[in-house]
Length: 351
Image 1 (cartoon, rainbow, N blue to C red):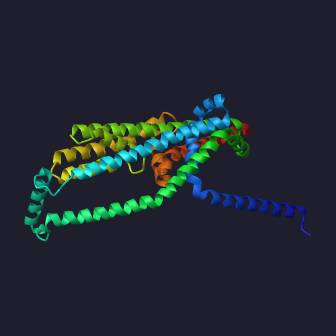
Image 2: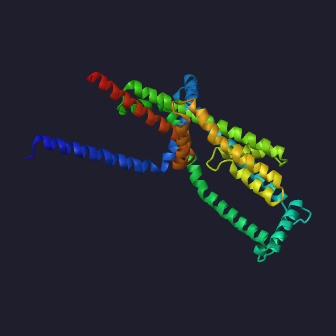
Image 3: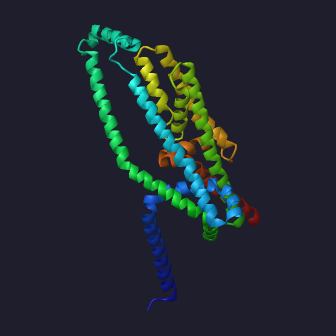
């Protein structure tokens, strides 16, 4: 018959095995929805103070409904309008480009450059420029068609994720206090340390989102002013588009880089080089310089750790990592500092 110590050890092992099994099964259930739920939690933390003011007037349920509706309008409506305007402006821009017109100065320069290449030894096997233009147009149309197909295939997933974000946001608003209270009971930390981490995380989330919006507006403003000075059509529109893409992992380069390349190909060498210099040295680099500066003043991390947490978070989690990266880094540093302080306190007590 096993002794009591053996039975207790077996029960403990079985208990931990059940806990780990249940934790894994819960992870499997939540894994497809982790990113939408994370975005919902981030939005809830960012707008929670506004929600609390609504709660004082309308109660929890109505305040959560109004807050969710307000976030929906703030996010979805501008996104839909931006996509609509972008498609409209992009169509007009494409229709305004006609390489077949011999009167086009850019096309004439391109033809002269191509003729010079054909006269050189390394370019004798080059075919007519029109042939390559047609092939490029066919490939571009194929890429656009495939991209459109991918967008339509993924649109259901995108809509589902947005619905999950908004659905979860309502419950994070309404039941946020109950969720945080349960989390306080589960976390095995001192109350003062735990509350300090909660406060710091909320402040860091708000600072990260605010700094991201600030950087995007600065990039869009620099881009729009540059386009206006270089005489490129619709500078305000393209500035807004650069600000929008600056919020995404793609970056503002998806706007200014093709324009700079087009200027170089059509013989506008000076304007093309100027746009590349401003784009690479100003518009794109401002993200790596300004965002760490804005965040360094809101957290105890130095600029290097903020920079690493931003880039590492972006590489690991995509756009979500711009918020999660600094939060994970700051939380880790807090745990290390608390451990070091505890060790020092223990040594002083022992001495």
